[in-house]
Length: 180
Image 1 (cartoon, rainbow, N blue to C red):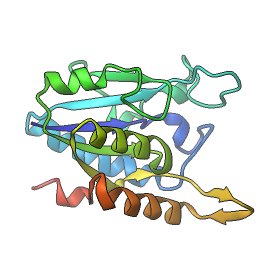
Image 2 (cartoon, one colour; image 1 turned 90 degrees about the vertical axis):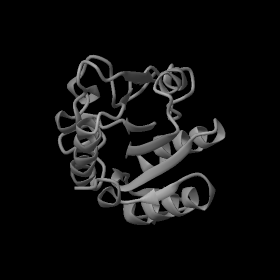
Image 3 (cartoon, rainbow, N blue to C red; image 1 turned 180 degrees about the horizontal axis):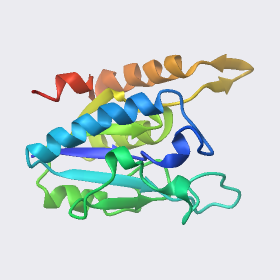
Image 4 (cartoon, rainbow, N blue to C red; image 1 turned 120 degrees about the vertical axis):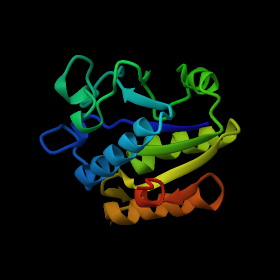
């Protein structure tokens, strides 16, 4: 069974949030198309929501509007929400149990941030034996800096996609999955 995994599409990552990403609106729009496709084909959908539990956290604060899942991909009451506190959606969560319940043979993953939670979750999924399709245009990230050098979000995004595509996932765009 193919299962859609939507990771951290939360309001803090959008304009007006405390940690906006570049391309978040475009990513959630593609994710909404994937979500509709999975729902229309009666395929399982799992949402992941990050709630901050570390001192000094500035976003995903429990009980705030920023921690809520974006309305374009809001879960239905029948769709499980996996709560997490670290980048890896499998670590200390019930995600693997939920995927086993659905007899998941392939995970279709999209979400926020490509360089953090998407990377950690895709690698963990592969390590746990899942076949993974990562939806490139339904993910977003932000500019980063290292050793005094600024790396634009688009370069961060594509570098992580290239690395994950080498072994961990099949990299696709939403249009390759959503068949009309």
